[in-house]
Length: 289
Image 1 (tube, rainbow, N blue to C red):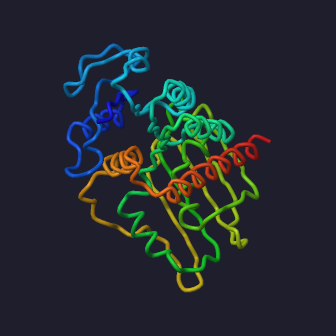
Image 2 (cartoon, rainbow, N blue to C red; image 1 turned 60 degrees about the vertical axis):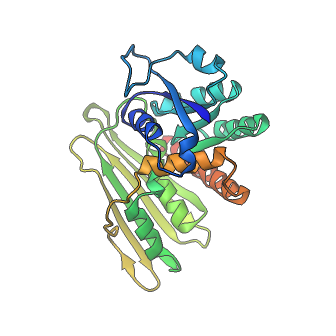
C-alpha cells in the first residue's frame, strides 16, 4: 500500500480524498490509502480524514505519495520539497510557471527514483476523446481554439500557464508546435484579459489560440479546425463517462506507482508536458515584450 496525503482542500483536494476512500474496484488506485490532508487553514476532519502538518507528511515513513491541489503559483516549491523528502508527487497542471524549473523537477524525480505526475484531466473528458477521434487521420489546413471563462482568482499565473489545458489539447491533436507571435490585452480594473497566440504545426499550418477571461464571460471552448476534407466548428457532445475524470487520473498515476505503465508512454507524456510549458513560457515572453 502507498500512504498518501493531500495538500490543499479546495474542490480538487476534496475529490482526491473521496476517490482514494472509494477507489475503482480492481484498479491500481486500490493500493492508495489516504493518511491525512494539509491546509493553511485549521480545519476539522474532512470525510473522516484528519489534518496533519507539512513536517509530519515529510517525516512519516508511512506516507509515500503527495497530491498537490493548491493554487498554481505554489506548485513548484511544493513539488520540490516533497520530491527532496523522497515522496512520489501528483500535481495539478501546471507543475511550474517556467520550463527550466519543470526540467529540474523531472531530473530530481529521476535521480531519486520517484514518480512525478502532472494531472491532465482535460485529455480524459468524453467530448475531447470524441474530438480526437474526429481529427485523427485528417490533414489540418488551419485552425483556432478560443476559450472564454470568468475572471481568474489571484495565484493562477499568466494566461498561457493557467490555460495550459487548451494548449495541451492543441499539442495532443496536432503534434509539436512553435510560436510565431503573441499579444495580450488587459483591463486590470475590470479583471479582463485576452491573450492571442499564433502557432505553427511542424508542417507550417497556422493555429490560433485565444484565452479570454473576464467577469460574466461564459465558460466555453470554440473551435474552428479546417482540414483537407472538412471543417469542424463544434466539439462533439458526448455522454459523461462511467468513471470520473479525477478517478481516471488517479488510476493512471497509481499504475505508474505500480510500474504498470510502459516506459515509452511515460517518456511521451513527459515530452508533451515539457513542450507545452516551453510554449507557454515563449508566449508569455512575447506578450510581455
